[in-house]
Length: 263
Image (cartoon, rainbow, N blue to C red; front, side, top):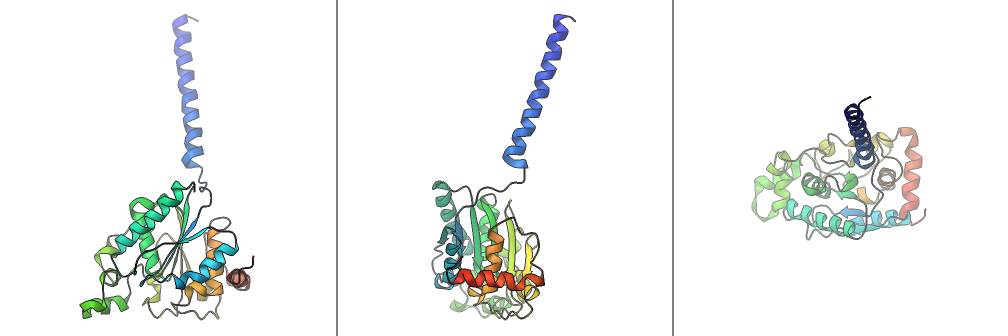
């Protein structure tokens, strides 16, 4: 074999090896489907910005060893895009502190805030996102407030009205995170309650898990069943379907133990 031919074949072999290495690296870094390591849980309050309403979830998540941080969104009635910026700052601070990712739990309007954030810079930062009773398609309560006008329906209220420009412009579940939407058929604030259904997310109506569940909108963050669903969504393998009705007792019991600070 001539020297030129050997050089040509050697070049082909080198190119082939580079291609193989490239595939391996790509699979290792981004194509393996593996999630980043578990990081802090960022809780986003609902309309009105009350952090007290999230206290049960804080207790429950800390009882299983999670680092929990409640995002300060102000009074929770201002522009949801500004609230999403606050969520972004909290996520950036966690990453700057060494976290590989963040999990996000958004209650009520907080779930919409999470979508606004994910549609911007947060889509590839979150590992998992759970929304609780979030009006992803608006609520007739806000729509009525928007019609009445005046100070009774500030910016966030108008943005949560059915068909608002903000909601119409949002993609469903952007980014690489696993999304779960938990909602109750007894919701008196998000109307209709199935406004919480979100394409691309695992849809969990609490009454489909436990037929005897009686959970109002305000009761979602502290309900044992809901807490159990959140714990399951954030721990272990990604949840790709709602728990069957046969697991009602186990999910509820896990939430009850966590709510009193017991593993």
